[in-house]
Amino acid sequence: MFRLSEKGEKIQGMFGSIAPRYDFLNRLLSFGIDRYWRKKAVRLIKYREGSRILDVATGTGDVALEIARSTPSSVKITGADFCQEMVEFGQAKVATSPYAGRIDFKMAPCEDLPFPDNTFDSVTIAFGIRNVVDRRLGLAEMWRVLRPGGRVVILEFSTPRSQFFKQIYYFYFRRLLPVIGGFFSKYNAYKYLPDSVLEFPSHEEFSHMVADAGFRNIHIHPLTFGIATIYAGEKE
Image (cartoon, rainbow, N blue to C red):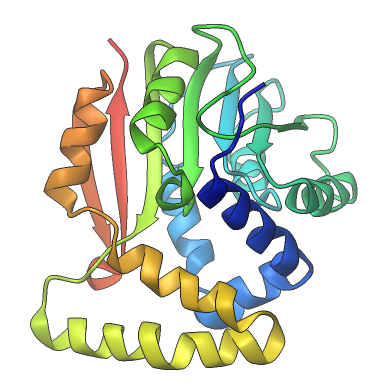
């Protein structure tokens, strides 16, 4: 059993505390654009009839549900997350959807995925890789469970390159977002969000990390002035 670090346990507890308001605040704080970003990411997955797809750091299952909506009924999706409260909300949400028979959940951190080698045709992770304490190990695990020829799709916040837009972005992330998030949920959790985004590696640094994990044919897709970025790579 993988033992979380002290930092990992704090992040796990933080997500547990905001789970009841997580979906609502995602829509509110992103002005609903997070749905568009997830759809763009899901369009890049690889699948075929009978494929298995893994969504890591699935949270309440938004990406898993989008994958189900976008793929044939023979495709099965597993959502993995290290936060029990998030998984419970995800299970309840999926149970009331048309895709309940196609999506299952596992409690697991990205660094220790409980699946055999070469299991999935695609692996996704949306707004979760920055919360993985040992990112290199997490990427290595995603590579391990991916089948040869399969694709990893990583969606994450990023820092805009335009200096003008960057200043607006920083003001919203550092000043407004924690206050709005704190009004509805936990202030400290929504202060952690901008801090974790601003500490995340640049496009170049992170794409090198993805390559070091063994992925090839890596493509970078900036979204909405660079607020978010999709990284896609393949296992040869």
